[in-house]
Image 1 (cartoon, protein in one colour):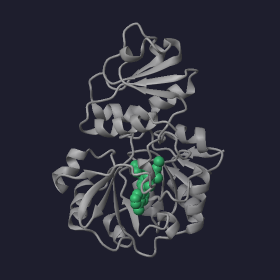
Image 2: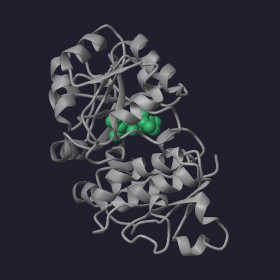
Image 3: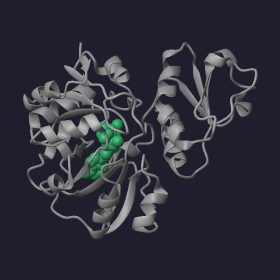
Image 4: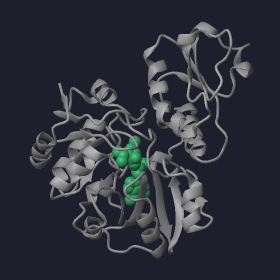
Amino acid sequence: MAIVGMDINKAVDILTKGELVAIPTETVYGLAGNALDPDAVLKIFEVKKRPSFDPLIVHCSNVNQVNNYVSEMPEVAFKMAAAFWPGPLTLVLPKKSVIPDIVTSGLPTVGIRIPDHPLTSRLLQALDFPLAAPSANPFGYVSPTTAHHVEDQLGHSIKYILDGGACDIGIESTIIGFDGGKAIVYRLGGKPLEMIEEIAGKVNISRHTGLPATPGMLRSHYAPGKKMYLGKWEYFQNMLDKSETGLICFRNPVEDYPQDLQVVLSRSGNMKEAAKKLFAALRYFDSLDVRNIVAELLPEEGLGRAINDRLRRAAAEK
Ligand code: TXA
Ligand code: MG
């Protein structure tokens, strides 16, 4: 079983030997290995049972390091990097050949981000290589936002989990790619669209095309084991049994509904608080003996867009 702790030296030691460590970030926990070592990266795919066509994000400690791994950065990418790194933003950019093909699933581009978490920033500074890290969950399942979530699912197959507490943002990074210098959103995430557009102007959101160009965009992803329904409880109350249904509400609890069968994401209607609690709520209902989860959608703005995106994917037919 994995040891859970806060020992950066131990993490450095394990990673330097080509083994894996789960690391905290401000978005979700990552399953990290040396991004420059194809054998370490292969272990990531094996532990996650991740298909080899799904490329990994490379985590760097600073912009100088990023320059070692990307060959080109459009003007607008520079501006976003300056404004939002460290932070919940991944930029997909043409890669240099030092990044092994296994990291990018053979694509000529690499997803790069500088995470914003004190422990992981110190870890990255102490290493002389960047870290490839997908979310530390089995492929297709809900991302982990605590060390305990990681331990639950991957504890038997990794040595060490660096415990940085509950993730501050709680949903994955926003992923941006570029086409002829123009920004495109590949995945909605922790950096709200409105903030991206302040820098990049109006951007398009890439829709899933059936090709796994960005599996985070697969229609069914981030999925709990229960049947999900989207909307208010009142729409479903005649068709679902209360005792078999967990509710995820945005601000207001449903009156006369069992307390332990509902999670209110934010009583004050704060989307940041809601995002932070979302994945733990899905896991909570997965752990209960219920059949269904009914989740209310949030207003389509700010982080609400990314939250709704995750809920829709969680609800999509597998
Ligand atoms: O917040 C996050 O982004 C977290 C933390 C750990 O950094 N990581 C994360 O990784 O969510 P993952 O692997 O679960 O999702 C990364 C997504 C995948 O859907 C992958 O397809 C996409 O990023 N991606 C990575 N490199 C890409 C590339 N070169 N082109 C297009 N998509 C890419
Ligand atoms: Mg993931």
